[in-house]
Amino acid sequence: MTMEVTMPAPGEAPLPVRALLEAGVHFGHQTKRWNPKMRQYIYGARNGIHIIDLDQTARLFTRAYNFISDVVGKGGHVLFVGTKRQAQEIVQEEAARAGMHFVTNRWLGGTLTNFRTIRTGIARLRDIEKMKEDGTYENLPKKETLMLEKERIRLEEYIGGIKNMNGLPGAVFLIDPALEDIAVKEAKKLGIPLVAITDTNCDPDQINFPIPGNDDAIRAIKLVTARIADACIEGVQKRRDVPGGEHRGGRDQDMSPRERDRERGRERGPGGGGDRRPGGGGGGRGPGGGRGPGGNAPPRGPGGSGPGWPTAHGGQSAAPAPAAAPGPIVEKVGPRGTSSHGGSEPSGT
Image (tube, rainbow, N blue to C red; front, side, top):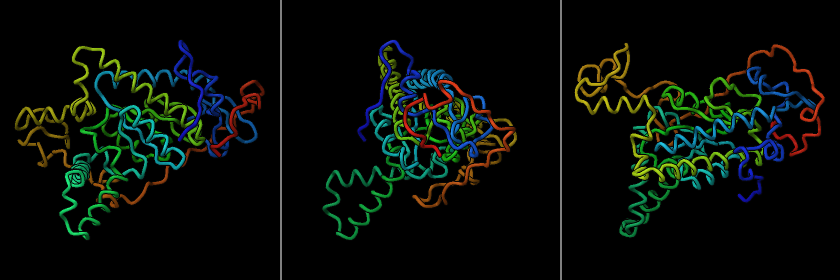
């Protein structure tokens, strides 16, 4: 997707207010669809549409940008998630440009919380691709070749963006956390930091690094996602500038702190490094480890079941309804609460 967006000049903030304004990032949803927890990020309302405070957006984006750059610079990776139609192509392009992983089709339950099962699908996809590359396809019956190709296409559609992900990501970047609620729950369960564009209908308390802004307009999504990808590229450069840093980013670096501790506990031997709390993940294969009492068996609840390759997940649950509004926001007349905002027409209605 080719689209011109205004990028910051040298010395400017990662995303100056000028660029945010031109991309229409300030347009929120209809006032009747808001989440009261977003009140602190809303400047006012005009024609039934909430107007987001771009000064806060620019400040919070700088915080998120620096965090992403640090995560990648220390050897971690970022998982880009955007399954809504207008975000799919942008997310895939920018994640690929930065050398990161992405999910742009339906989020499969257990993508993070049951990653070991996801790995079986990834291994299967790699095996089929290898068969296609080394000429094995040519020696198979035509019917079997067609079946394998159909399976490859299906797996590529759902897990192609994470087929090179050897462990859990160091952070997750989301477009519309209200839509990607299952991904949010899985990341929070594992302690993986979340960075997300949060529109006026979202719950910012669920996100570690919220970026208040329009998550529906293509220009707004492109601008923010491209700059997050730039932060990843900057982090990769930081890693290369450190002696031996180019060798970072293996499986251990990809994992969240909680998952990393569990893996190291298993390596220490029977019962080593286990979680001593009731129901906690035991270490190794000794008492309380693996699948024994208190072991960390793969979750079976919502968002924790395996993908079934790829239809076991029965779709996404609806986002929780926002609490009753404590009171309407009074419309403000000013340079950012009126038509002087300019920019794109509101898309988040």
